[in-house]
Image 1 (cartoon, rainbow, N blue to C red):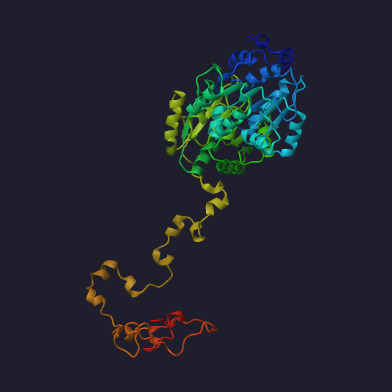
Image 2 (cartoon, rainbow, N blue to C red; image 1 turned 90 degrees about the vertical axis):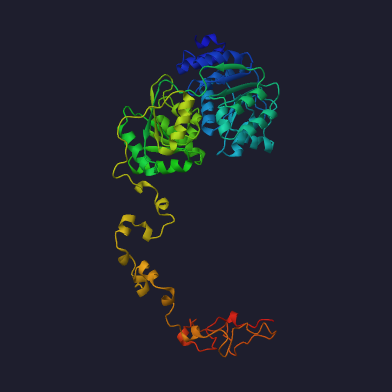
Length: 510
C-alpha cells in the first residue's frame, strides 16, 4: 500500500513524495486512517518504526481547514524532552512546507518573551514539554480551551521522568470533546490506567510486542572489572577494535558519569561530544547537530538521547552502564538498526550488573550472548584519566603516594620519634610481669601524699561544713601577657596552685 491510499491531502502527498518516501511503515498504515476519521488512537510500537509521521501527516491534512486564534492553539503535542519536541517541529517544517501553518515550540532553555510573541500571533500546532506548558498557562498567557487534537508521545518516557501528574493536569485543561492520540513503546500498569482515563473508545494499533528489540540489532555483552577506570579501558579497546564503526552513541546512567567519560575519551584522542540534561539548550542542540552531520563520530549521552531521536545511520550503541530499568535497554539499542539497517549493541557488564542483565533478558525474551575475546584490564589501565579533583579529594599529601611505596619502609624508618624503653619491649614480655612489680615504681612526692595530709586541701574542701573554699591569695589574671606555661610536678610546691587555670580558682558558693 502507498501513501495515496491512506486519505491524505494532495499537499501532504506532494511533501511526502518530495522527501523520497513511497511506502508507509506498519504503524503509519494502520494509524493514519483512524486519525483522519477523528477516532482516539492508542499506538504501541517499538522505537524507530515511524510513529512521529503517523500523527504528523494526518494532522497536516486536518489543519488545512480553519484558522488559529491568539493564545488558543488548535492542536497540542506533548513530548518528554526538548530534543524530541524540536525533532517533531522539524517534521512539521518538512512535510508542511506547502502550507501556511504557525508552529510554536515551548521548551525550557528559551526566553518566555519570544514564546509569548508566537502565542500572541496565533498557533495552529503547539509542541511543548509539560513543565514549560504549565508555566505559560499559570502566567495566563496560554488558553487550552481551543485544542481540537491532543497528542501524547513517548508516554512511557513521561512516566519514567515523573510527568504523569502534569499530564493529568493538562488533560483537565483541554476540552472533553478533543481527539486524543496516545503513542508509547511499552505498556506498564500506570500507562494503562492513564489510557483508560483519558481515551474514549480508542482504536488500538499494535505493530510489535511491547518492549521488544529490533531483529536487525546484533547484541552482545562484554565483562569488565567493577572499577570505573577498568570500564573505560575496556570501552577504548572496543572502540579501537570495532568493525564497520561509522558512529556510536555511548550511554551512561548518570549525568556526572557522562561528563567524566567525555573528558576521558577526549584526553585519549577520540573525537567525541556530550549530551545530558544539565547542559543548556544551545549546547545540547549543537552536539546533536554535529553528531547527525558526522562531524563527531562519538556521542556520550544519558537517557535523554534514548527515546525517539531520529538519527537513522547509527552503526553502534555502547552501554557503558547497564540501565537499571529493562525498558531503557530496549530504547537505547533502538538508536541503531533503524529503517531496516543492521546495527550493533554492546553492553559493558560488571559483577553488580548481573541482576539487571537477567531482568533485561527476561523482558526481551532472549539471552544476550557474551562477546568473544579477552577483555581483562590492560597493565596500564589506571585512573590517571579521572579528573584530578576526584582522585585527590579527601586525602592528605602523604596519602597521595602509592600505598606500596609507603608500606615498603620498615616501621622504624616511618616513625622518626624515639620510643621509650617500655614501648621497645615486646607486649608479651611487658604483661608477663606481676602487677605489683609494674606498679612499684617510685611516685613523686606530690603523688605519694595522702589526700588528707598537707597544708592545703582541694579547692572545694570546705563545702561539707558550709564554709567557703580556700582561695589562694594570688589569682592569675586573664589579662596577663606572659606566655602560658605548663607546670611540672618537680616545679610545684605543696599548696602552690599557680599552675592551675584561673577558672578553677574562682570562689564557689556554698
